[in-house]
Image (cartoon, rainbow, N blue to C red; front, side, top):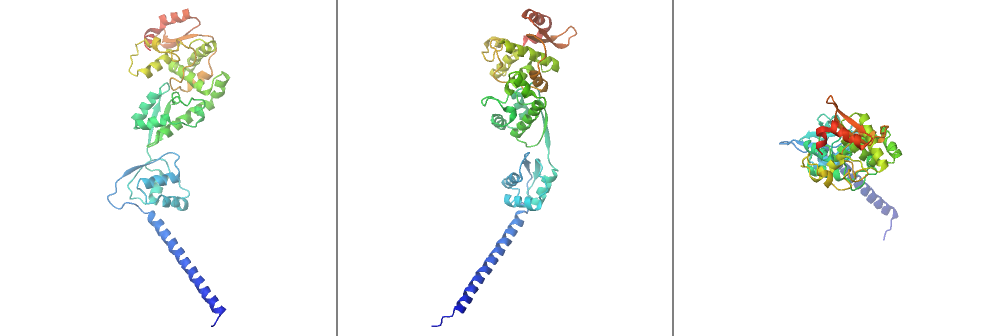
Length: 363
């Protein structure tokens, strides 16, 4: 029997070569298939009878998030192909937040171009007033088109933000809806709206060194905001100097362990109990229990009672000089609204008789 090693080696070499060629062919086919899949995935998903739909890009959305949402909305064939396109063919393009109108007849290139140019992005404005409450903020968000369940979820969410440091976890965001006019892209989430508000309010806190000033007075940031909310509710329409003087009255009372005597605190609690109450029903002054009855119990209220503006925040941190223990708002001889201060209860009662009028007949 013939045994030829050379022939065996030749056969083995042919087998290896055949396998190598087969692998190359498979690789070429796979690459070609992947290329064809990629090119096809970039084409429009709709050719006729395409219906327009709104597509929202939230602020700070990543390319991957946008790709996934486009696929879920049926506007592109493949999120993976879209992501590859962004890396390979649209490296320097920024995808702008906003609300876009697509039909599915746009290929990936056109969609990316539209998102980059932001040509159909829409914005809206919403105003929150200093002195407003969380209830008022909810109403403004509802008028802006947000559903109550969206608002509730955002209001109840736990946020990791330096502005909220020290805020008890079980209390609401009362006091943190900073009064100003804000502009957002249509479709922005309530959560992102709140984050922008927090950023804006915290910038006011930082730029005025309020946290350190509150600490010097013995307050945490949360307590400072709570005091500012009372100042806002009592004197928010008055000039900064008056707000600082009102802050002086409250600060001195707190230091001496005297009740704040702020009917605004009692009114806030009364509104929570009965939103439709009569403002002339003064019985709440006696029926509201501690810790909310500021005529009976000393100390700050358990939570802020309004959303303080910049002046009130500053006033709480920088109370005016003086040793007044009382104040009221009333009208002078010329009919001008102003604040009247007193050192004693007798002086205060005289101010009430002479200047308060109808302002002292509602709670």
